[in-house]
Length: 297
Image 1 (cartoon, rainbow, N blue to C red):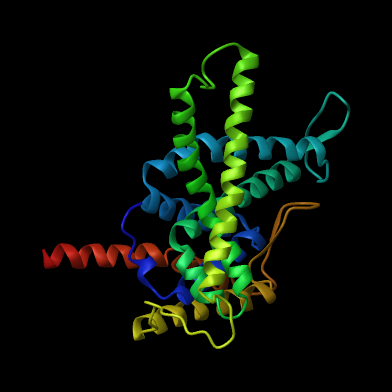
Image 2: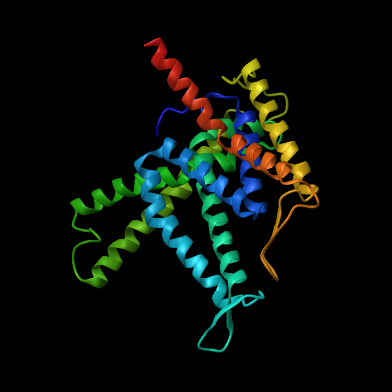
C-alpha cells in the first residue's frame, strides 16, 4: 500500500468521510454523481493499492459491470423507448438498459470505496471509535477486517507444509486433490476458531470492555482534523439539502429525465462541483503532502 496522508487524520475524520461518500454512492443515481463517485473511488483506490487495485478492476469490477448491466434489461422491461424485442417476446427498452448500467456502476463504485475504507480504517481505529461504546462489536469488526488477509497468509503456510508431506492439491488424481483440499480446509477452520478463541481470551484477560477501564491511544484530535471534518460536513450538508429539494434528481422510468425541482442549472452544477471536491478530498491531501515533501527535499 502506498503511503497515504489521509490515513494520518483522526479516525473520526476518516470514518465521517467514508460514511458520507459511500452513502452518496449508494443513494445518488444521477449519472453525473455516479461518474464522480466512480472516478474518485478508483483513483483513490489505485493511489492506495497500486497494481492490486488495477488487477481488481480488470479481473473483478469490469466483468461484474458488464454482467450486471446486461442482466437488468433481460428481467426488467419497464420504459417507454423500445429498442428491440427479445426472443421470448418481451421488449428491450432504453430505460431498463440505462438503469442497469447505472446500477452496475453504483455497485462497483461502492466496492471500490470499501476497498479504500479497508486500507484506511485499520483495526486499531475501529477499537478506538467503538471500544468504549460497544466493545464486543468493535472487537468483532476488528477481527473480521483482519481475518481475510491473515487467513490467506496462513493458508499459504499450511499448503506449503502439506506439500512437503505429499498432500498437495495440485498432485494426484481428482479424488486425491479433493481429499487434500478438504484436509487443508479442515485445518484452516480449526485454526480460525482457535485463533478467535485465543484473541477473545486475551482481550478478556486484559480487562477489555470493563467499566472504568482506561485505554492508551495514539490518536489526538488536532486543529487540522477540525478543519477537515468541518470541510466534509459542510459539503455533505449542502449536498443533502440539494438532494431534499430535488435540485439534481434523475428519473429512469417511465422515461429518462433530469428533474431539477424548478431550480436553475447553476445550482445543479454547484452541487456536482461540491460532490467532486468532497470525493477528491483524500487525493488533494495526498498531492499537497507530496508537493510539500518534494519541496523540503
